[in-house]
Amino acid sequence: MKKQSLIRGYYHAGMATLAGSLVYLFSKAALQEVSLAQFGVWWFFFGIIWNLLYSLTPHEIPSYKRIDKKSIRILVFIGFIEIIATTSFYMSINVANNPALPSFVRNMEYVFIAIIGLMLLKEKFNKLEAVGVMLTFAGVFVIGYNQSFSFSSLLQGATGLMLLSASFYAIRTTTAKRIVKSLSPTILALNRASFLMMFALIMLIVRNESIIVSEQAFLIILAGSFLGPFLTSISQYSALVYLEASFTSILQSTTGLFVLLGAWVYFGSLPLWYQVIGGIITIAGVVILTQGKKKAME
Image 1 (cartoon, one colour):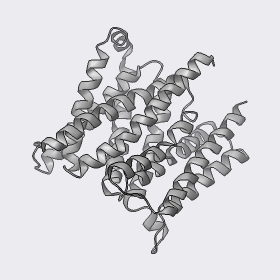
Image 2 (cartoon, helix red, strand yellow; image 1 turned 180 degrees about the vertical axis):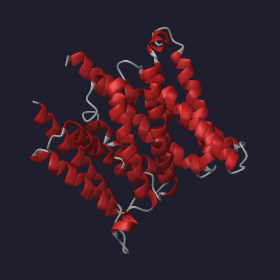
Image 3 (cartoon, helix red, strand yellow; image 1 turned 135 degrees about the vertical axis):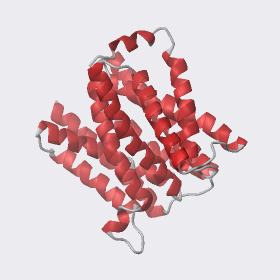
């Protein structure tokens, strides 16, 4: 791979990491003001607006000509995967005491990506990959630990929701990697925002909730929607154009550290010391897993 392409890939991955870190903070702040359905409607409505504006730029318009029936089927599949992954993602942030905790658990996505690759290619983990997987799992167990700890308790609450989210995000990422060069990142991001906005609107109607939110919540969502459904999505999909899905994990696995700092500044709270250690263990696990995969490809 050319050096210029690698630089572009890591640039987009870095942008996704920084913007994604702020998404945890903005969404947590917004969800303290509004319901999940209200949040989803406005968050992804503005996400559609940002993406539409960007898609009308001259270099993006030609990409729409590449959409065929096969592409539409894949977009619909990814759209439904996004509904499960993203809904459980924001539910996890909503119920978590500190948004840094689900951001660390999100690192399990890279383990699930590796497992999916293993199933599709029928390969085996090398020693480094195995150590990385075990470390990441260990970090999640440490994060989810409490005095009444059990395996069932690990699967409940914010940790369980983020594990569900990470597993479906892994399916999304693996699928998107196969088509991202034929369908632009903008189309994928716009597809994501559209499916999620429609789902949130259905939930709002079913639950008979008002679409009206406070001015403060509106402003938080307006700013956060630029970072999340637009900038983070575009950057994540753009990184996949230049990098292998597993390679983007090194930068993005550090999201939790940025969220940790932001949560301390904005909310004035920090996770328990052993939860921070668990988060760092998940990052170490992802880095070792990625290095192991890189070694296997040499």
